Length: 328
Ligand code: F6P
Image (cartoon, protein in one colour):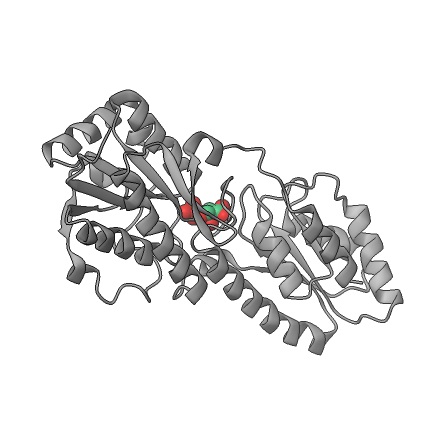
């Protein structure tokens, strides 16, 4: 396919992430740059099915780069999982004269984009937007850096009260399938232990040993970071276990939850989103489809969407080693 694109649709789907607005803005302005039209689709695939769209120009994305969330709003759309739903979405794309779609989201959103392409040969490009950083083939996803800063800020505050009361805090962070937030925020926040979904071998015994070691070496308070997707005991069961077996610990639980997804994007996320948004329109204008625009060694790169969805993404073992060493 050569440069036949005259109108691009853009949507945000799945969990929102700070920097999504900056990515939409970059897509819109790259379309202006190429002198083609851009249509924003509200609420992800739901808006495609309901034909809920708006034409966007350079001015309609003014004052959005600094805003968290997504002004196009997002949704997890069950109808789009069904072939009938995707047919309605495709018919609306054709009706509106949209030639290609930019999907900003995570793995679920990319899976939907691939299906749309496979069934209707419709050009799609993905931009990784999720705080979890759990997409293969890109060093970073949009929103991850902001979420890390939010989590580290929260840990710093918890540390103040933990040390004042000689307490042990179990802090739960987001990351359904990936421990990226937990590892980096754990190192940045000076945690004693970091529990993640990818490391099944982490047992409660190791945690108890680690606590005993901390006590022996003179630590009076401790912070343990627990990724929400960690296998085995949940955070409340862990609290009860520690409480039962080491009653000398005054244990508290803090679940950070959705505050991790909010807030103004960091400059790093704004720059990343701008780079990937422009890269996505560049890719479509070059005739590419079924690719994600990711970042590797600071450069925008194109990655096959199937590779982006590879579940065997490697964990950064070096970072785990660093975490072990610096938490002594
Ligand atoms: O965006 C990804 C994520 O933050 C996961 O870490 C978390 O499990 C999930 O979203 C929760 O999303 P929701 O509240 O939208 O179901």
